[in-house]
Image (cartoon, rainbow, N blue to C red; front, side):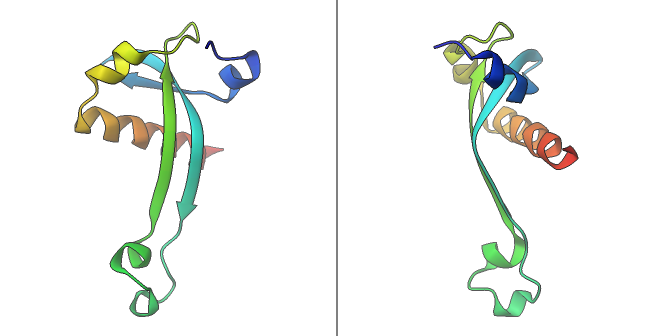
Length: 90
């Protein structure tokens, strides 16, 4: 299903292995580090983390399954970094 005009406005411009795309963020939750890491229930909570889910679309707003299949760990991390940077800049 194609992105609606509203979803296109909310989508983040990213690139996957040099190919421009749109990432529609479906879930974004930032967990800040605990003020006192010694009291945190785990080392992950002490350092803080981000939960992030997104779907990739081409620049016309169509699902880009072919682009998702090209992604490896490095490309996935780069897309996540672009999304997090964009979310923090807002």
